[in-house]
Length: 106
Length: 125
Image 1 (cartoon, each protein chain N blue to C red):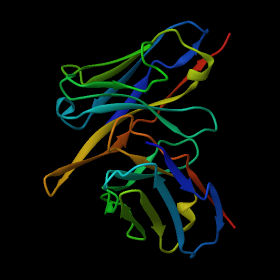
Image 2: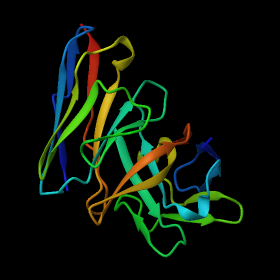
Image 3: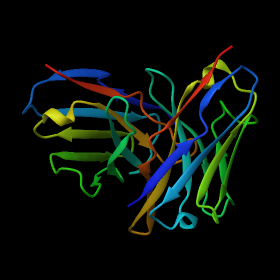
């Protein structure tokens, strides 16, 4: 199963609403997770089961979707949110990742 | 506190071997499936291999099948990745990650909830 994220990169300002999409090449129900990765650091789980917020993750992050189309939304971008975001499908092996979306400062 | 600490990375020549280890603490290691995920320099994340809690189920990416072997020792709270016949394209930071499964409405939804800091493997002559 291939995952295609869009956009590959974006520039945004603090306070902006940001939406990242992830499209699966076939239906994956809600078997999707979102991760945040900062340079030189390990990925951090943000969202699992497509829309469930991981404990400790700020509520400005939200996920939605089912089947083939998913979104990660940051309601009000904060300075610490500038990072690369990855989706991952865990519906079937191999559990593939999207190519990533880099969120940069405008 | 959950901790995953990888070790064993380094510089190896093409065709060589390396064994990575991941020491787990702060949780009941024997109850969780574990994964290896890698990231080539400047590239995205690539899933490498998975092993179930009792080692009954093992999966590999096509890119490493036949060359890499995942294993675990639950008595030692440790995960391993034996890498043979290494190639330049295996150069990457290798992360171990824990699989947590969320159960809802009779379905289980896995995700990688804890990751180690990574260990760098460089394959070069």
